[in-house]
Length: 118
Image (tube, rainbow, N blue to C red; front, side, top):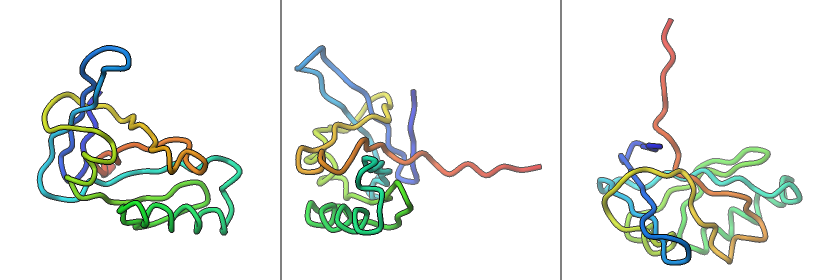
């Protein structure tokens, strides 16, 4: 499966089992992320608390809704936080960092916006 955002991010998982790793290739644009909150944190105060935690981890929250937060990460920080290297096939699934596990159900790279035409 290929996932691309405006930064043209491609990821792939290499290796097997505990030794597998996710690899990515991108331009210098920030990586756009979609963060799904756990059900118990889908309140105004829960979203705000999660946004503050994301910012403290070096991610830049850009928008939020009732259940999700959009954020951006610079390439080096993305690679460090999610353990990715340049190159490869895409995967939308990223490991949720331990510091976010209480709040976050899943994190994925935002796909490129698709315009629908008549």
